Image 1 (cartoon, rainbow, N blue to C red):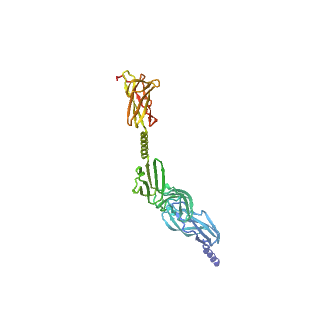
Image 2: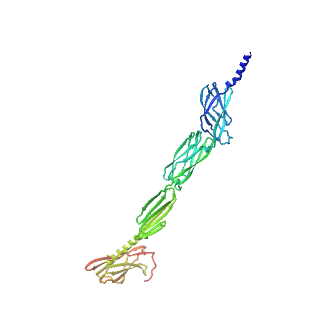
Image 3: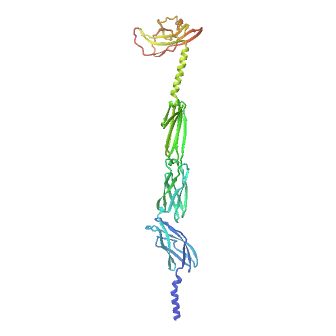
Length: 460
């Protein structure tokens, strides 16, 4: 009996040791992260070997709010299994940095053990790095990136990129330590005024119900780009436009030189005025020297107005032609008309023709014609006509000869009982004469009279 008693006692003493958990655990994860406020677990990859009898094991912790996997995990005796264990963060978690905590493993028989785990607790904004590749003013696009700095898998991540050069947004997933790049098209008008240097890239990130702002830098590489365009139009009024544009991102010095001859400069205006004017012989040099900021333009307008000199030349030519024509004229007839107040109330006009000889001429026959509605008064002034033909309505004067510079004045009065209103035109007078044995002809100007309403009769 004593042997049996001692045997039973030995069995009961060693029974807890036989049923106790015997697990070998190896943490295969590395620096796993836990994001504050984000309802997403930190995942640990545990390699577990069951050195004892097969059992079902449950995982739980007191550091977080919940644990994965749910339920139990079966591990047979001497079996090795990889188990993904997830820890959800508490909403009141304020401690940041690397924190060690215990994961509890409980068998179906009620036995349990702990295993220490290390997690990196960080806010959302510290999980990312953002930036961009260097680019130049003439770049058509730029590559931007966002990088996951921790061992944490972000699903359905939204990012909004903002900079002085562009605005871009996208939704995507980002695995542990993964870097994602995007190609963004640049609008040069958006940054044409910006200088070279470093600029801030602001990125708004949203993961689940958490939002954060992350900043990075962009390098706008220095480049000097000055473009020049020219436009010229007009002949009489010639306009020449020069535009210098700083399309780079640094302050650039520019110099524009324009030359004019001493004649054209007299009729040329500038906007703006040149900074310096230098004359070398018959050429005048105009210089504009400016410093242009990025995006700045220099517009130079040069206008040469040839209208005044052209009119002056045309006037001179006309004067020369008229002078030559006048000098070639041997006889000049000038006809004029004036109103005469008649006693009987008739419409009456006094017609005068001045005959002037520029050279010595002979056998001068001056012919004038009467308007159809008029009659000829018997009184004449100056020279008396040689012939009056009322049927043909012609009056003729004859001079045997006229010396150079000699003038004769012939005049007569015409009248009409029919009132005349408006513009009254008289025919031109004609002269036929001989010069050096050759017959020539000259014609007067055409005289006009503006008739008003009928006037009261007044004595001559």
